Image (cartoon, rainbow, N blue to C red; front, side, top):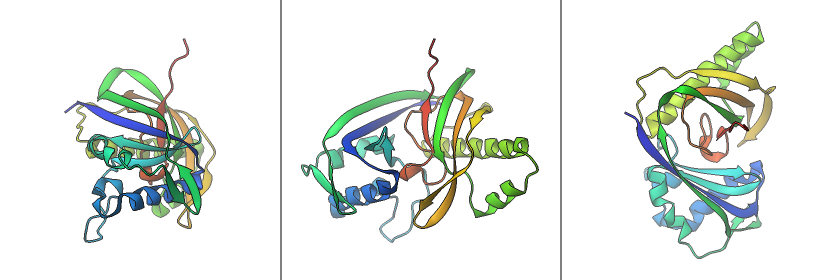
Length: 227
């Protein structure tokens, strides 16, 4: 079932580092207090985790703090936007909540006969188990093929989370793959990549896919043809 997916990217004036994104998320949730909607933090009242694609995501977009709301997330983002407090505290630093830009989008998510080019930043495809498998592969061709399968799985998880079912095969071609580099989340080291790829499916800008999509990993942007 193909459908139009709405997103709302709210970009603030304040600059933020990648290491401050988790603190930014915590500060937003703290400001909302007991009335915070579950989509802001993905935790049930009984402290259980909501194992579903995050529909409100916290990011660093062009160096600035940002919140990206997707589908139902876009319906509840007004809860935070309505707060009059113009500053929040992120690790002891005051962060201005003056809005720099708001980017609404409505995209028909489906497969097409043509290909679309994307850049995927800070993608963390490997967990402890498949990292060992990745390391054991004989050559870069096999490693790239493994990452392609994981990327397709990440996209399918995103589609499931927004209620889109694709009948046709999702095609992926990795055009450019960075050397792996390490980032740290809660003292856990993550192997991350920057990837340029093309696919036959439309994907909204600024959403995250893969591990830690809610806190600035796996951010997708479409690469527009310059001609």
